[in-house]
Image 1: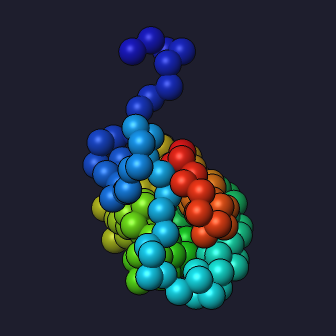
Image 2: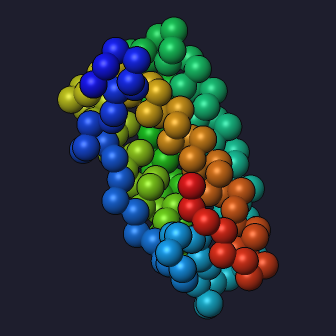
Length: 147
């Protein structure tokens, strides 16, 4: 790797997503028996949690040992994972699970909130925002490609 190439993420921090695929590209799907009103409520709740997680990550940039901020980010990932799993949104649940695991390792002091972890945490929030933003199209019958 040259000094101009970005460092790749450690393999244990990269997710293996549970996804559905109707073509060559993996897509976000909604189960046929999904409760649409619960999914719409989830969209609003997930957006709020992700905004809070992003604010906590910004606090962590200046205070990487702030336990409350780490817990806020962890809680956002944990809640999104659990609710999306309950709703059958496997791609979101799978990715949120890996993001949650990374923050859990930070909480347990197995991994410092330094190096690639802050960048991966911000990227996880951004990806979850993208996935949540794709839900309305999936509800309308489209098959949005996963990022």
